[in-house]
Image (cartoon, rainbow, N blue to C red):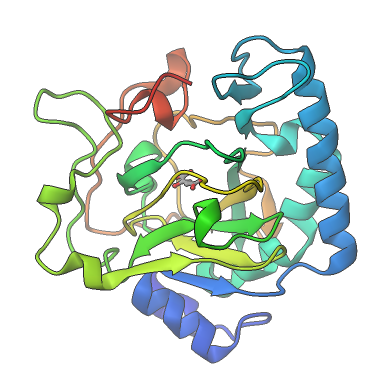
Length: 296
Ligand SMILES: O=C(O)CCC(=O)C(=O)O
């Protein structure tokens, strides 16, 4: 659904100002979005999954490990598709404020696409280079967006998500380098003059929701602190937005309608989208592709 049609529907959880900020900037932070009881359950599910990772010695499609990971000292970069591995995560993605927020910015009919739980372990947690999300998973329109939830407090030292305000509006950058390799990375020298003035640091206490438009340029720094930075990321679109490449993070819930009803007609934005490599042979996660990041 296109933005002008979304705005014809009243918002249910976002204020008018928050919704306008999201459409104008391509990003927003909603503090206190997740209630204390739900947050505790999500943290419990996360702890259970981290415990399970102790038995894992190398990336296995479920966990992407950070170097130094061991049974006594688990260090993770990502739990791939948390909705597949613990019911609490699917309950959250489908029944909670996460889907309500998506409905406020995607329109009343909302489709789930995929999820991930990104970690930045204390004194580590790799930086994420500047990139745009949607070239990794193009859809017929640009309604897809991510609801990110900080499961612990996230201030500057923890490596919060950073976004370049308004960068969802101009034509998108290529996620390939000059040699044609998919790098999911925008070199800073390719950004416009004065871009640093538009960087917003999306910090927030545990339970904050960070909203990210699928075209907005974003990234994050390493975690310089002694506290972990877990961030749950649920990706949704309008029900009438159709993905047309293999989902890099498939799950049994891909395409589930979590608000409203399924679409009868697809929505098409006239702006095309750069295509990613073929993910049908598997997806290794972004770190392997980003120049300078070690393999995950
Ligand atoms: O975890 C982060 O800091 C960045 C996440 C991100 O940009 C992504 O998954 O696309």
